[in-house]
Image 1 (cartoon, each protein chain N blue to C red):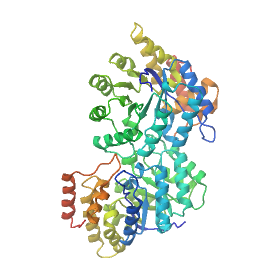
Image 2 (tube, rainbow over the protein chains, first blue to last red):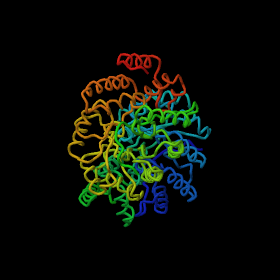
Image 3 (spheres, chains in turn yellow, red):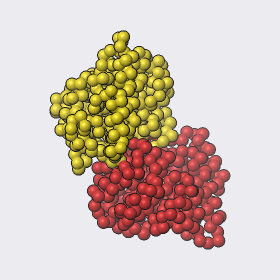
Image 4 (tube, chains in turn orange, brown):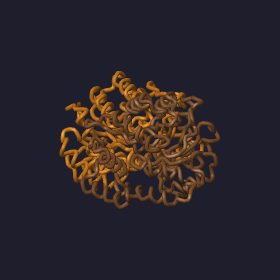
Length: 299
Length: 299
């Protein structure tokens, strides 16, 4: 299991057929395109992937399709964190067994007001049960969605107990102070900000890359920023990427990304979302594409 | 499928063996005791049941143990709401197929900021897929935990579309104004407050009962209140029940309830919780039992 993947990772959107079943054909096509366009790796089953709207078996099946489709498992980080430990263990063991580079694990996210002691116990139980030296975990900090934060104290405890296993974090707090704290206070910890608005600042402090929803539609722009962040044009590349980000997030993120891909591919099949998500209405879609045009971005 | 169950329902705690596997023996013993002590029905797999820490198969298995154990399925409301529609459909179909009186369905609870349109689509998809005339749904409104609220507008839409199916709600908002609104604005809708502090007030406005965590330890007291709420002693019965409630909720609810049952049964096996929950330390347990004693309640 490679642990060295760095760069721009796209948390891949999950396409659905009209009957809401997973569309593995469109999925594989998108994955290959993202890697062709410059992504260094892919995250399967992140928040952007509507992963929490997929059943456990659907996740397993799609990951297998993916590996059988010939994409290098070493370029993959797989989201495997569910509310119930037996299910997190099952998905995590499955991903590790297939040779994936890492797993991205949400804390158990139903119960709120949970202590760090309880979250430590939950992660520890998963690690002990998976019991595989190849396991490499990225913690998933996305408190505005999950409602359960990953504190510095929890990271410290987990790294002390499992230094070879708990190797990094995706910080989707949207809070630069938190990302900076992670980069400054946890040397050697692999920090992926979950948002490219702070990508350059984060890379300069040692971030290993960026895992961002908009990589689904702007892989090339983000790859350019990653390639050029040490150079003279870095600020301009950041501003260009940020403008696209701001335009996309002017609407609900996942519906907006699917609308962009549908237009790009002239394929309305991409517009299907699983409830509770709903598509953009005409007015919102119009506003999205106007904003993108204003940002100089061609969908 | 009976739809007429009313009264005090206990959302049954789930006991675990030391290895964290589900302990179906202790579970059945508790269920029978709660019914003997006066509960009119049971909710399996509510928030108090650590249901969100159980795998889908564990829920199915435990429900089957329960039915095979001879408890009347007509006294059961089963929590079946998960984040992913295919899984909610599977658990719901399973419970209906076993003859359970109703199901209690959380909204998909991972994604936040979801529109009523999206939540309607999610519930509608479940109902259409289960496609069983016997299906009776209670919506589960527990926004402080789930992070996703059930609005009056959503209830109106669901009742209009599925009047025979969407028959009630468990209101665990802890907000009397919301419970009163439900009782006043939705005549015929079966409202179970999720907290006995407002039980008498709610019954007087037409609530059909109460589903409350503390029924696990105070079934008799709550059954007395339900039996006597129209009589002269109602206020006193309410005050007695409320005092117990306040004492229990002075600590984390699920660990506190398990500590009380462990002491009552002289059985430390009841102290086991699944992470992310952790047990009360000695100080907190001491405070809990002192509070209970102060409330005149013998664990």
